[in-house]
View 1: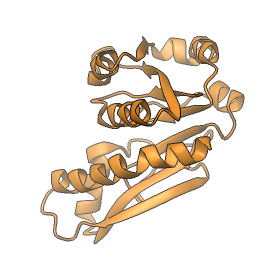
View 2: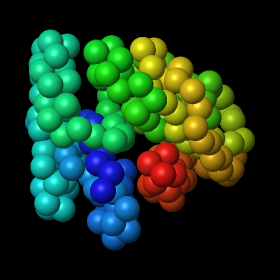
View 3: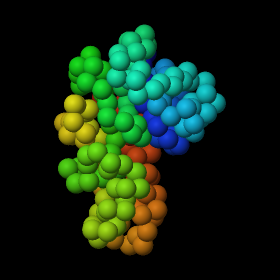
Length: 186
C-alpha cells in the first residue's frame, strides 16, 4: 500500500479529510502527520483517526532531523496540507516530484511568502476578483512556484466577506485534494 506523510500547521480540516478518504478507499495510507505547531488542532484530529504524529521545531526542520524522520516512513508522497513554513531544500532534493502542496488561490495569482489562508481570501476580496479557487502543485525550492498539477475555480463575486470566500474555496479543497493525491499515487 502506498504511504503518505502529511505536513500541516493548523486546524487540519484537509488532513482529516485526506485521512478519512484513504481509510475508506484503502488505496493508500496516511502513515503520519508532521506539524511545526504543538498546539495545532490537526494533531488531535490525526490522533483520533489513529495516525501517528510528529512535532518539530524550525531548528529540527533545518538541521536534517525532519528529513531523517521522514525517511523512516519511506513515503511515496509528501502532502503539504496547510503547512505554513517554507519547505526545506534537503527534503525537496530527497523527494523530487513526490511533494505536493495545495494553495487557496489560482496561482500564479496570490502566491508567495505570507500568502496563505485568510490573507489570500482578503486579497481576492479587496481586488474584487470574480473567481477564486485552488491550485495543487509540486513543491520546489520556491514558495508556490512548482509545476502545476490541478486547478479548480469557483465564483466568488457574490461573496461579501473573506470568510465567505474561504468556505467556497475549502469546499473545492475537500472535493478535489484527495482525488488528485490518489491520481498521483497511481
